Image (tube, rainbow, N blue to C red; front, side):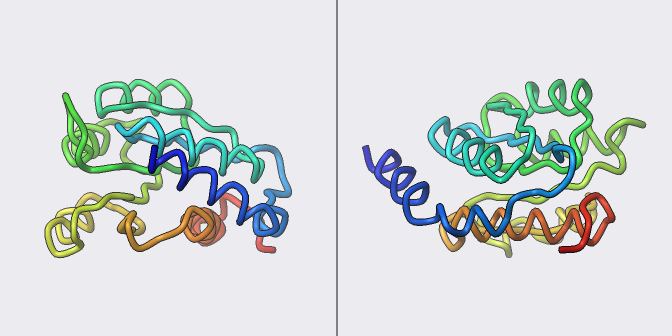
Length: 155
């Protein structure tokens, strides 16, 4: 119930922000790897409204398949997930030819001190704590990373 209220709030309040964050090119591709369905759906709707092509997975095992199959420009990755954690998924992905250079933003509720060093060693571009960040801020962070890596034009 609370997650649905949060989802509704963010979708309603941030409509004007979406207009300013619309992607002006053929659709950039993002994979959202998140075990909580309501959060995954919220980010899917947010990124689709901003012009992204969105792929989803609910755990690290599905995440690896989605990334290998769809070759996203960037991955939004939770760390605490069933079956295969985000960290384990990232380690496996980095060991492959197709996954060693994929851009990754970690979006989790683990404190930065718990995981930040490991994430830098695994080539994570940014570490975001869910509880401290709005979906609009996450969208802005994704756009900035893609611009910085020449995957989106400067606006």
